[in-house]
Amino acid sequence: MVEVESSVMERIQEQGLIYARELNALYQQERAQRRALEAAQRRLEEEWASRDAFVAVISHELRTPLVAVWAFLEILMAEVGDRLEPAHREFLEIAYRKVGELVRAVRELTEFVSLDGNRQWPVRRDGLDLADLVARVVAEFIPMAGEQQISLTSEIAPGQPILIGWQELHLILYHLVSNAVKFTPPGGQVWVRGHFEGTELVVQVTDTGIGIPAEVQHAIFRPFYQVEHHLTRSHEGLGLGLALVERAVRVLNGSVTVQSAVGQGTTFTVRLPYEAPGSLQATIERLSLELERLQAQSLRIAQDFRQVYRSQQLTAEELAALRHQLRQDAES
Amino acid sequence: MTRKILIADDEASLRMLVRATLENDDCQVFEAQSGLEALRLAREVQPDLVFLDVVMPELRGYEVCRELRRDASTNSVVVVMLTAQSEPSDRQRGIEAGADHYLTKPFSPLELLRLAEQVFFQ
Image 1 (cartoon, chains in turn cyan, brown):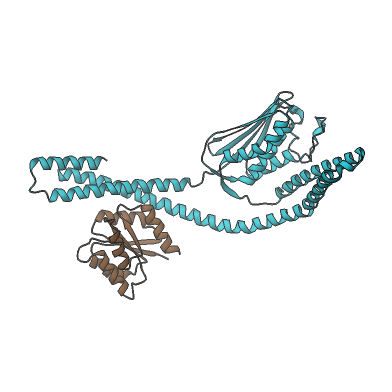
Image 2: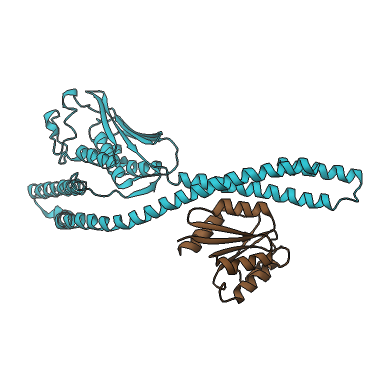
């Protein structure tokens, strides 16, 4: 009996050694990755600081004064608007509206400059929950969509948090949703859908809007592309939204495509490669747990052995019970 | 720089497990089957990290640890007690003997790897 059980024990221990060597190798690999990442992170921190400083200067020099003017105009309208002649009050309102447009345009410009394709800006990759980010972007546009009686919904396939440049992804979503809501007539619908395909994140923004004629679809991602070429409308903006989307997609090494039919609607599809954080780490942890389990099993069997050795004087029934216990421990 | 680890346990399978988990190009593992052998090897190879089983022939883990701390050539080594017992009083005895860490069998191999990394790289 002892021979049978000790062969079980040997099998467990052999398995344990195989796992332990695998764990050892994976851990070395993970440690090397971790150290390289830490070194890269330190280098990037410095570059991020310069990017942030650059964007901060632009924003400060252009945006801050504008926002001040905007705010003062708003105060003027509220405080003295009633006392002005209707024509003067209208001038004030126009000024307020136009400055608001300028504020948004400067925001787009700032984003555009910070995504300058000629500068190799590093991407800050953080763990991100896609559903969370989409929910935040959708929430920003709910009031605007509501005013225009547009239904705005999102469907995100559940998944692990992913490592991706979330500032860029936020910008992509923001401008695609903004575009969809802008170009969809009242009563229409806008959907944001997201799912994972292998190592790619696929995001689609679909609307039932006016659509983009086939002959201009190639041009819509150009910076400052003037939409009045195919749409006579009064939508504000610099025409940078889709150019920004295209740049951000490029920064993240992804692709963006458009499908559209005039009068039926448009779908933008963005594909972005991502990393699942800690997949190596997850394997390491699984292996370690499995080894711990094997260890516990062999410890239990060893304990049973000791009892067997001490059991020379046991009765036949007691021996049978012990044998049963040994088998159970070996199988568990 | 090659690091050295000493594992002292009378169970061959446990020594093999520790070796398989920790040994690599930068890290050499030495094995001792008894408390006395552990002391002798520790003085000879000057390890960076020692795992000591509590229950060993000749000299128990606690005594080995106390001896290591007494000897100027080995008193700065990081000592981890390994034991099947998990009574709080055992932990207390290990700490009193001068152990730095205390692991209860079955231990997590990942914890072993993290511990070694912490000892070697900090």
